[in-house]
Image (cartoon, rainbow, N blue to C red; front, side, top):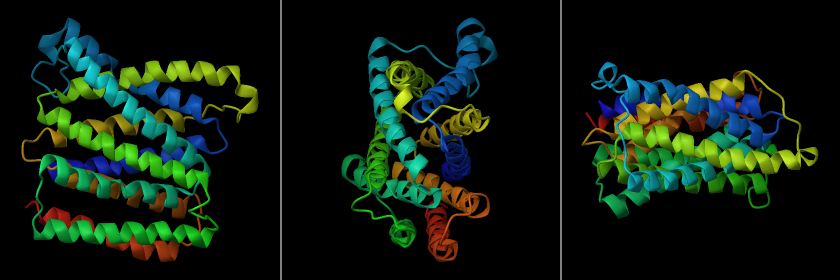
Length: 299
């Protein structure tokens, strides 16, 4: 059951990537990122207010937010720093790279998460799961190499380095999620409060950007900015719910969740008119095959 939720999260995450690309096109990154954290926080506000003032209305639902002590909040602040670091790198990379390249490199994140899960949490994969992982790894590397056909020199492009750093910190965040939830941290406490801490940190970064905004790309409001937050909150809510299952495996959840690259790929082909779609489509088929074997391995 938890894998089904991971795949639902993947579709929502793919839409998040699409709206992120739309919002960042010829736009200032820092204000977009701040507004993303702001809207995410506002979307969680009803859950906070109901849990505090009318707890009986949500106490036995998925939206109940229990109280957390000071030590718990310190752990969540670290989560916010890790995620925000990944987002800053990913947003700048997404602005300057084709979504079919940036999204695919980011999709290789589960490979790093898998290595961490094997070393840290002692997770073990069955035969079907190993087949799915290996096929997925091969497909991700094949897709990433497609950038060379578009004039992107991976060894000399700083935006490639940015998306790689986003991938590394994203894998670290996934492993930290598993650590928190496996040690009794409430999933709603983690998701809601790390969102608010991100907003606070981004408010400070926004002030720095505002003082030097004349040297930056002008900011333009677009409705897609709100939809970034909407799809992200939904994707993360279902993701944390999947991880809350006792038998869930972060290596598999992370891999399945990154299959959302299929959604962003389709939008890149149909709406953004990106190049080398046919060759990338063959490689993308391997992603789907890999995801199917992951599904077989959890039945």
